[in-house]
Length: 254
Image (cartoon, rainbow, N blue to C red; front, side, top):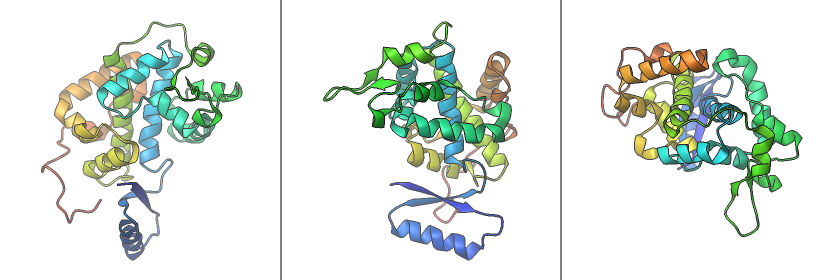
């Protein structure tokens, strides 16, 4: 079922929020209430994930290695292929608009903008990170890779997954702290339905809980030491369980 974010503004009346949620449900959508903040919730978490993939590319890891790693984790497609589907011009504009709001938490990658400048807009333009030959399966385009890949050594699949997924987790946890999303369950529902986050993993907070809070924090500390403060664990990732019960009750608000 498609997700819809219902944005609660500073003066939103509860009856208005309830009306929109009811209307969305009648349209066959799943409503999740979010706060009024840059990117709301889904785009904020997704942009952190996609931006990290671009940074990894700019450091020297090839397109197919990045996308294969995240597909192996359970994503429906790799982040660079997803950027092609979104449109690289759209992605570059969103990143430029969101960067000032998040500073070191989201250092801006330039690969998407560089490809746009070279006339590569993604699938809608016939070429982006991937080539789209008629009647054939899209494949990473060496011409695009030459324009944006850095000189470093390729990363392992495990590091690629940790950097992209834990960047998303930290963005989601910060949004939880700020009240942009009401609960880990609401966040996981939004990400599974909104971006196709590996459904069998139950969402980014469920994944973190299954992996273990201490293990997650230790791994993020290692990533922060090597790749910067965006991986310093958010306070919401402290000593707590995200799911004191298995799942929210039917009456618990999302």
